[in-house]
Image 1 (cartoon, rainbow, N blue to C red):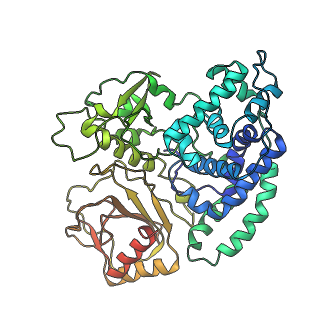
Image 2: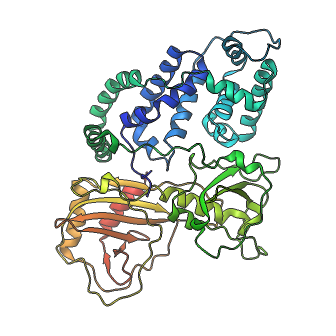
Image 3: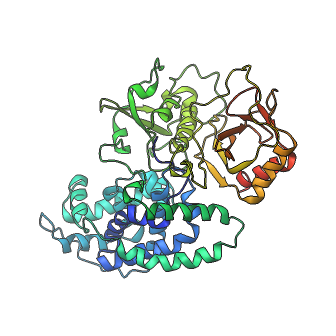
Length: 492
């Protein structure tokens, strides 16, 4: 399984892994080394207080959220714009010519051009970075391309090559770390008194483990690979989907959602994080059924909204239009969002033997086992040594879906004491589970006993938990424990 999105990397790890890319994007926005480093450094310093929030927004969303912060910082600054003559320059353009053409643009136009051409983002992703609607982002991008491409005499492909060669190819991130660490240390001192300090301490502790060990153990953040599927691949005519006769992962290695920006699009929602669904279990969790008569579908918007881009295991790319999928594609989008959130979960250093903190395991492929004859496995008086509460999103197609990350909260001493008080009163029993109707989320508690045994407790409503997914091995918790878990995960 890939590294989990649900648990964040440390701040320094992120800067080491992705700082150079931020510097290169910033360089194209401001046009020089010192200005780019200052822009990124300011962005990181402002982002550190919200780091826990930013890193829990969703799977693979670190880049998207930091890019949004970078753009916001850039737009807030009042850079002097040097007007150059609009005469066409000779081909190939010089460095000064390219910088002069970029200086002709307004801040938002320059952002749109850089993110589209240099970073390879879609109009929807550019709009998310600009905190604007897709149509406006597309207008900024087209006007910027007409201005710069027209002046330099370059089409989009040649302009992309020119911009890629303009900033330093491998900028150092040492200056970023030196400047952000003092600020980070001061904030940690203040945040340590906050009620949410447990989760922050977990992130800092894991960062120390990683930083003090073998550098090879630091897992890089998930980033699109050069050969990965992109939204530019969705421009081909869509193909009619077929009902799957075998697990999708046997023929498909990655699936990406791309918003349509044509006139008449009925989707005003935001894009998911900048990563395709690519893990085998996650790919198999997607619902890509072809459209039927539509009579069984709920009352959902109809019309063009998005496309699914499928990268085959043979390297071939095909696209599905949402209108060709069951219920106009909304179940497919809902399952895509859920698969994307889940594919980063699983075992990692947080769940390693001897680790103080536990991560959230993926629930893909897991369901309650048929009733068996085994006795209850959670005796009265059992003591939990460590536990983490997790809230996993479920695919529900009764409304236009939205991306929801896996919520996680490492339990501190008061929460563990509450769980152990319930276990002191009673353990699990051979009984039916909760009668609560399954909603849009699933509560899961990952726990470790004093003897080292690992448990997964799952519940629809945080009232009766199935032990290790056994349908007839259930533990009913007190109202206080139910309310505590809901407060940790729902009231955020």
